[in-house]
Amino acid sequence: MKYLVVGPAWIGDMVMAHSLLRQLRKQDPEAVIDVLAPTFSLPVVRRMAEVHEALDLPFKHGETALGPRAQLGRSLKGRGYDKAIILPRSFKTAVTPFFAGIPERVGFSGELRSWMLTDARKRLPREIDGRIADQTVTRFISLGLTAEQARQPIEVLNPVLGIDQANLDQVVAKLGLDLSRPVVCLCPGAEYGPAKQWPLERHAELARTLVDKGYQVWVIGSPKEAAAGDTIAAGDHPHILNLCGKTQLVDAIDLFSLATAVVSHDSGLMHVAAATGVKTIGIYGSSSAEFTPPLSDQAVVVSVPTDCAPCFKRECPYGHYKCLTGISVDRVLAAVENPA
Image 1 (cartoon, rainbow, N blue to C red):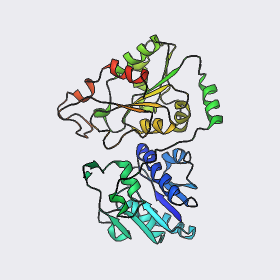
Image 2 (cartoon, helix red, strand yellow; image 1 turned 120 degrees about the horizontal axis):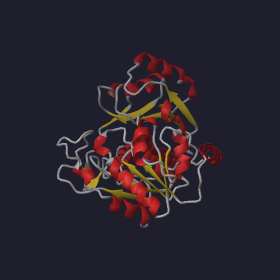
Image 3 (cartoon, rainbow, N blue to C red; image 1 turned 90 degrees about the vertical axis):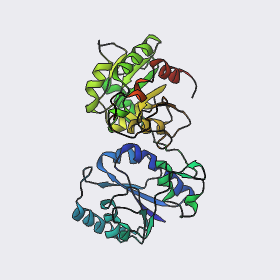
Image 4 (cartoon, rainbow, N blue to C red; image 1 turned 30 degrees about the vertical axis):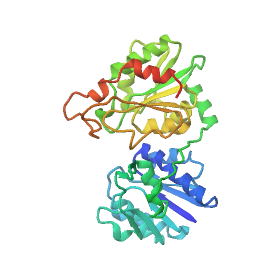
């Protein structure tokens, strides 16, 4: 079988989609799997061993571009795909496989797109026989199974992102990193919104405490988190380094492999860290690990029971953010230091 998998628009979801690719390869060791993915996520897709070719989906987040998507599909006609698996549920993401003429096209129904699919699935209910069925990862995997198989307990093969040692060596040299102290990475960002973000002063206190215990701290994130990194690293402490905006996403993958632990909100970087095999502490506020857990045997979830959580909101509807402020530095520190 030759597959075209249309990947999701978020980095965390793209990492979780690797579980589907691993399942497809397990079902058919000779399967050829190409992934059509947004430009920014291609470097991550290329770190997935099962991917034959990572194809560029050159559209901005939310951009409709139906004509260019159709043209892209026509350009793929000669590749001989047997089946397309379309992970996003939007109308526009079904256009390219349809115009590529791929004989089988499976995805979830919605946005009046079912006519472009040969197998339009209903989204799984939240629970089936008392078990959570609507996890993002199991939803993705279900599209690689028959409809009947998808109603049975689904095996999840955890995502695995490869490490590029040559790139790692270059990044360590470029940044002048000293590896004499054990490393803990802090990832203070969450693109979704502040209802996922543990207070910056808690990150800063955690960083100082870790340094006092003999660790060094690397703050990892995009240029958007540079100011947050400055807050955490305030005082120019020699063992707290703000690397936000100084690395590419694939550099973060490689740097995580050097860490003792990574502390992150429920974000793309949390899923990236988990897929490297490093101990990952996932801090959850408005979201829930029942639906988007860090997929690793070395993952620890930290959350606090709150009457209004999970609300899945970008901002706290009540303004108190108790689901985050209720998480103490000591609790996160214990998660770092204790066995997973």
